[in-house]
Length: 332
Image (cartoon, rainbow, N blue to C red; front, side, top):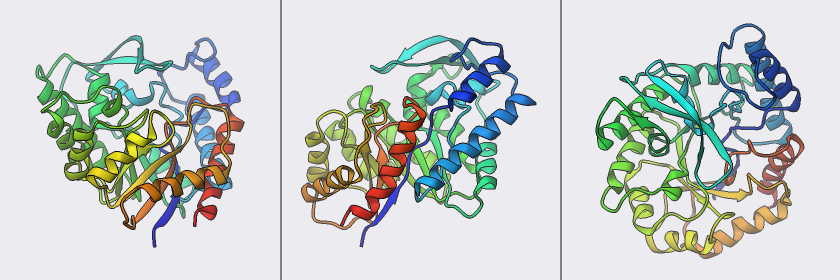
């Protein structure tokens, strides 16, 4: 019987109090939460936010707990923007959304910083008995968002980003799941003939952990050829399939035509829309997918938002967590 797991890929919204507090502490205008010295009061504020994010998940009843990534001011460009061998350029817009980050320009050799590992250790301390999930940008998306000023070759750069992330993962505390966020696979897919280079990079990171690896793609359907490569070559336990954005018929066609990973991660809740889905609606989307997909029993079906939840107001984000958790009880 398929296990239903309600979870999220992380990157939660900052509570309103934290936006104000951190803005004052960092000496920036409200909402301009760029990185900097995180000692003293700033570290204490982030610790309080982390505890709040974990408590939100426990109260909602999620099956797997993420750290919340409140320090990820640059979203999917983190943790690269904090690296000593990276210069951060100006604020730029990425993808076809109102998402902004500092352009990470890699100027030297990359190695692990331990930044995300420290976050995970802190989250595990907040809820030591709960299954822990780690979150990272996937190597293809991170390489896509970064600028290479050191390695000199696209292939070498993508491989270096993958090695860097794998080194970060090697330092993680025990975790049950690893979410690799890969929207660039949809928004800016590999050129024809280079799909295996992208899947090799993902496999490098996936091989660095014994946890279940979810490669979460979103903002529409993957191209057919790329989808087939990901299923066969990426080393993922589950591939994220967006049933909210784009034509979900294209998404399910890929599964019908090319099969699927042993488990599946379904983007069922809109991470960028304040409308809160009912648990029954989420369950209907799961059942619709399973009615269209090949007759097979997935080891695990992850019930996820289709994107990060950073874009939502606090009350809406919490309501969506609760709806996902409740939906696991509704799905037959």
